[in-house]
Image (cartoon, rainbow, N blue to C red; front, side, top):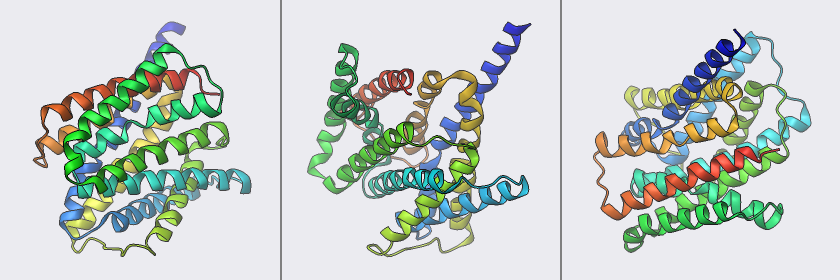
Amino acid sequence: MQKQCYLRDYRKGFILVMIAAISYGLQPLFSHFAYNDGANPVGLLISRFLIAALLILGWLKIKKIRLPRKKPFLQSMLIGVGYACAALGYYNASHSTSVSLAVILMFSFPAFVTLYSILFLKESATAGRLISMTLAMSGVMLAAGIEFRGDLNGILWALFAAISYGAAIIYGSHNAKPENPLASACSILFGCVLTLSIASLLEHIHLPQSISGWSATLGLALFATILPIATFISGSPLIGAASASTLSTLEPIVAVLIAVSLIGEQLNLSAYLGGVMVLIAAFVLSRNCANHSP
């Protein structure tokens, strides 16, 4: 009976985390329609995170759940700074270069996390880690190599996104201990909004211009932000960090499939090979990071 309950819970967690990964992978679809309606990355991201934060805050009020206390609240907001920088880098990269290339470069972040852990946190430099990091960096060079003659700005934005996301993960895993996952998620989203509001001082905000663009923005907030947050928070404890991080590699697959099949992007052979190399490295390094997380 106990084994059946475990299998049922694991199956439920597996489905929830898979939904989260697929939902996050839908971002290029919604952003494509918002961009076509006049939005730019800063305007779209501020709208996305503000809508998501207010909706989650409303839910917390209905359930009478308080936001974290001062210190955890500030820690969560700092994580939000990293996430906002990562989103800004990723959306600027996908807006100025191909979505597929931006996704591939973005998912090199486990290599940066592992390198930092080895250099500054004194974690062991195992052969598997070193091989995976080399594979990830080689994949990045292979995927981006043909593009270096084109939009170098987009490539730098994507690498900035990977480093920012890695920094947020490192800080969050070693400093922030959430009291309530949804309350912490709301605090993180407010950190995102604050960071992007500051970024808007350097770049003009362009919002969607019609109902179709705002519908895409609302879809981004609901189905590619709130839904994956809720399902990941609910599902990951049921299957463990290693399995959750492994399933999360579905996100770039979904994003690239959308870019190629629906948006009409074309990839050359080197981009495909580089993407596979980065994905394999992310798979291995994410499991390793999850198994060694505090």
